[in-house]
Amino acid sequence: MPGADPALVRAASSEGGRAASAALSAAVPRSGGSGAGRRIGAFRVRVHPLFLAAGVLSAFTGQLLFFLSAVLAALEHEFAHAIAARSEGYCLDKVVLMPYGAVISGDLSGIPPRAEAKVLLAGPLANAFTALAFAALWWLFPETYPYTEAAAEVSLSLFLVNLLPAYPLDGGRLLFLLLRPLGEARARLLSRISAFLTAAGILAVFAVSCFSRPNFSALFFALLLLAGNFGGGSYRRIAFPRGRSFSRGVEEKRIVLSSERTAGECVRYLREDRYLVLIVYEDGEYLGELSEGELFAVLEAGGYRTTLKEALERPLEEPLEGARPSRGGETGGNVFQMGVKK
Image (tube, rainbow, N blue to C red; front, side, top):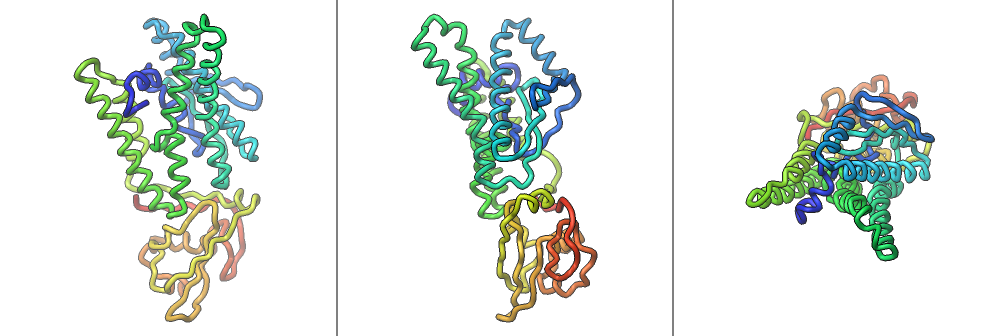
């Protein structure tokens, strides 16, 4: 696929990037713009106006069969994500047909790593199964090959593309999931490095293709990956929807630290699937505990350089919603959010 075989890159993104049909997998809710909507079973499917334009263009260029095959493969991919999520008790129920494929969204807040991996793998595996099914069909009925070649090619392409270790592809999300025990910040950095190297490899494919027939699909796909990883401002948001994770149950992660460590240094210990409690010691003497909610309160107040000792000594203000009351206060609602430098 990208970075290895220009023909497969063409197959996966014929009309400007269908290889990204599952690039925005179900891990993060996305909006799909305007367009007509229709409910299919428990799923709401919306059609973006640009999708219709891409369909008309493919009809005029003789690529309508390939376009329809890509759309069906993308829908299969996203519905597989949704079915896997539902089997784990989570909801992905909104699908938007875009000119480059399909985007699914919903609620995966608080999902455990094992369940998230299952959801992420479901899409590519569904495409792989379809490609193998077509191969078996050709072996039994060779005369069907000319009519199913495009569909098989697209399914295989989506399988290979989505295993690339680059966010927002499923492979990139899986890589981040595997790296997350190292800490959110370090995992995100390593994931970005992997995405950059992947995009560089795809750009190399484009550069080589320029000596014969330029493969602009490879260029588009590489730019899509770079935009997905390095676009936006200089801050990212960390949001832990604790209301839902508390209702399902979440393990507590207790870390013993020196009182001289700063609040900013503790960001690396934050994990969505663990509730963080900092045990603070000074010269071997126990000073107290700082809950995740209290740490977020310090950070949101701009106290990145505040030491844990200072955080324990500061007047306890009204706790953040969802905070664990390790020093008194009431527990409450839903989401922790914090701006953290990239």
